[in-house]
Image 1 (spheres, rainbow, N blue to C red):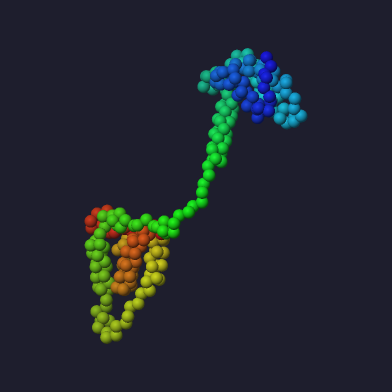
Image 2: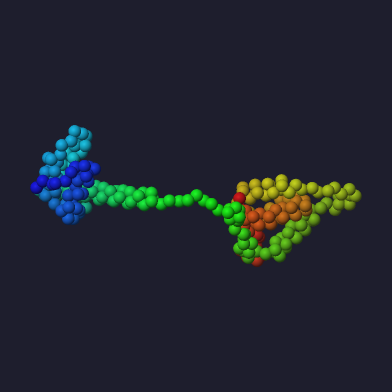
Length: 247
């Protein structure tokens, strides 16, 4: 029986086969090759195309269907596992993959149509809203840490710096001003945090060469905590405070 449809409705041999299967309400896993092959051949006989490249694709599929039809008439082959091989298996797999991509293309096309209907206006926010920054929750930032614990560590580090003073040289009368550049020390601490990622608060202070450097470094740590560039944590009460860098 001739099929009264136009070839332009199909994009290739798999599209035509899928149409025949859906039109005849056939189980794609149990294709009646004889009937489908006959309908397919009747259809391509009506085809008149100048493009032989496209026509050749339909002819190749026709040859594939005839080959499967012949294999269905022969005794079924058995694979290594002792199971009978279905000559239609490869064709069924191709049809399933084609069907999946076809309906995915329909879904993408529908989404494109829906997106074309949406109109968006330009962003117009007041300057106050654009300049707004979410406030920092210092309690969440510090966690179970508090200033008393930080103060205890700070005092212990300062005491260590005092213990390093030479008792002989400390008797000299000249006292020179110990100047520490805050900006340079900030760059140093940020670079240290960027390099180490997670490090000990105590060890960072112990690396300083003077009491003033310890004080400035301590203030910088508090500033970095305030801006959210670092987080501090302590597993147990007397454990070392660990600093995690967000730089």
